[in-house]
Image: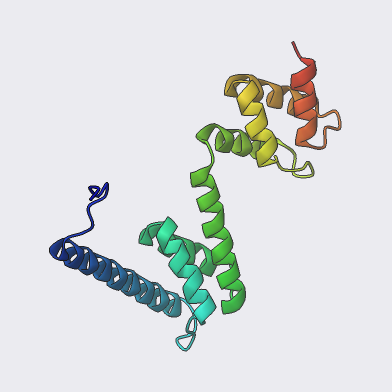
Length: 172
């Protein structure tokens, strides 16, 4: 008889693990109820989440802490009046925060820098292209090029031009 490479849970360990899972599920349900109650307080008292909305919030609870979701509700409530549109806005805010958490800090820094510096009629930075630039150039050099392009205001309409300038070393 060959020995087991993996020892299965003992009955006691299994019982403890199942109790832990039950506590975690109950805790998540309590947070979900709190979020729904907080949502109702900021809107009409009759509004309740649909099953789909509850699922969405549940997914967000797996990725973000409760206080971030509450903060996003406050943001959505201050911007949008109607509950259905407000919920979509809330999901957008939360999705953006999740993206920011997943991307390297340098990418977020460059995107924010470009979007702050550029005239509003210019396009926003593309995350994939920024990631490509970060792999080739350091943040200081990229910011230097952004400053030069914006200062010249020579019709640079999008982030691709920054990439072209970096590749051709136009400003060196």
